[in-house]
Image 1: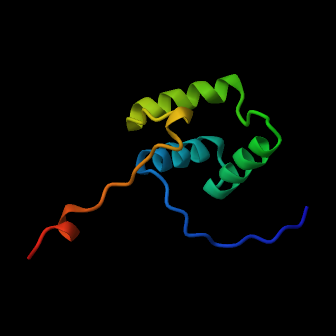
Image 2: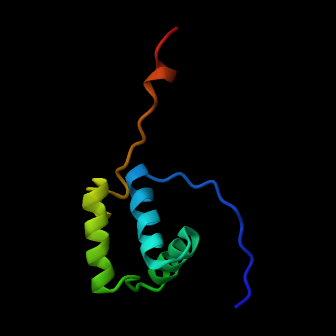
Length: 88
């Protein structure tokens, strides 16, 4: 299917990005392709991952220290850099 892609400026939690990149590498696909697949499955109420892939994700989450879960998705607050907040 022919599509048109656009570049985005999405900001994501650092450890989440590490897990996503590692999973994309493990599946031999681009990060963008992985995210598109996840979103398209979610839009149809389907799980995007097989049990084996979920096991791999669990291992990658442990490696990168990602403890966030779905329940955390609307409660994340970004920290600010101390250097920007401190007076000169």
